Length: 216
Image 1 (spheres, rainbow, N blue to C red):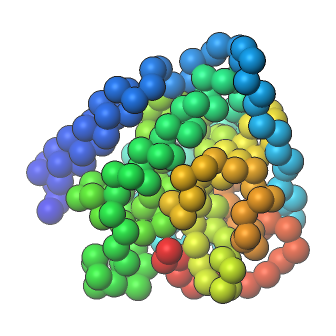
Image 2 (cartoon, helix red, strand yellow):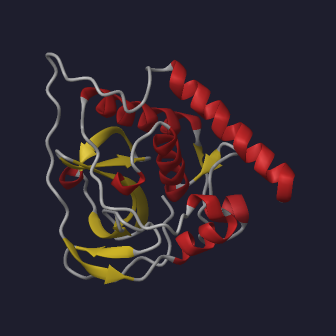
């Protein structure tokens, strides 16, 4: 489906998810201080230099230009208030529960296609893209929401969303309903988007070969 009809379906699907999100826990980015609860603490992932942009992201941007702005912004970490922490957890749970897993081969007859899961089906990168979109719609800074490629326990490619905060870095993962510090995930972190420009990607940690596809 292309053109106006496709954009209408996309907008309607994202709007419906946004309504559900709003009904499940207040306004996003709400700047309130924690009361008795303790906010989690994480660390930062080491960046070792620029790397190649994944084909999946480049192909996604060719179909969704509005999702891939070319304007460069100053790096900005998310202020991890209790309101923002609750928003991260709520969006992670909502998207994980709303989208049914389906491989790109079964979905599109392609090995790897990054897309917004507006028909209710997707694999790892589709979950991450939708979480990014919903969190930005709720006012969280784009520069803190970074699509990230990792290798899983079996060395296979997987995509998650890293959130860079003033209390360290956390991940939103379709394989886990908890928002966790990045170091608690059983993954080898490979590369992710730059904070300043989402179309520039950076190597994470010691250089390693990037997976050809992400598919969990």
